[in-house]
Image (tube, rainbow, N blue to C red; front, side, top):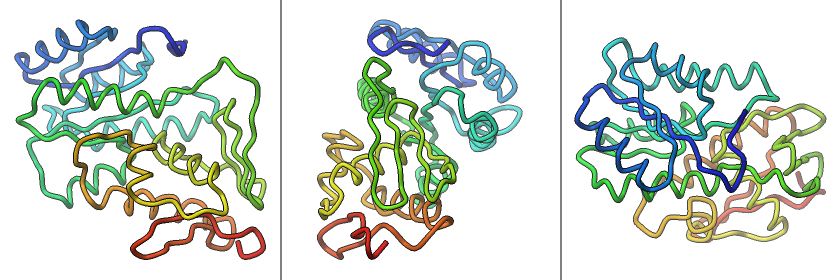
Length: 242
C-alpha cells in the first residue's frame, strides 16, 4: 500500500557504487525517510514492485542497463494500471549535457541531479519533489474543470473530452496550477515557485519543457488549450477559444 500522507515517505536509491549508496541511505534515513537500495536495473524494478516507494533516486548508468530504461518501464506500468500509485523519479548522473537533462525529463523524470552533488542538495530536492507529487487523500473530492478538461484532485485523474490523460506527477501539478488560475497568465517565476518549489536555480528551460509535454498530451483530444505570452508566462485559453 502507498505511504499515507503525513507518514514517512519511502525512497528507493538505485546506485551501483556502494559508497554513494551508503551515504544516500544513511543521510535520507537520518532525515526521516524509509530507504531501500538497489544496484542494478533488474533489482530496481523488483524493488519498486515490492516496496512501492514514493520516490526513486535513480542513477542513470547501471551495470545491466540504464536509468532511462528503468523510468520508461515504470511509466509504462503506470499507464497500464491507471488506478496504481504515483511514483516520482529523480535522475542522478555525472552527465550534465543539457540535452540529456531534457531527455531525462521527457522520459518522465521529475528532477535531475548531477554528480558530484552536495548531500544537503539531494535531501532538499527529494523533499521538494515529494511536496509536489504526494497526493492528499484526506479531503473530499474536488474537481477542477475548464472547457472539456477535468481534473479530480482526490483520484488524481485528468480527462479531456472524456478521454483519460496520463500525466507524470510534475505534469499533473503544473496543469493543476494552471487550472487553479484559469483565465490568468501565470509567470514562469510563479510556476517555478509553486510547482517546482525551488529556492535555488533550476535549468532555464524546465518550464518550457514541461509546457511542451502538457501540450502534446492535451492536444491529442482537442484544440490547443495552453496559451503562451512571450516574456510573460502561460495560461489556459478562454473556454470559447479552446
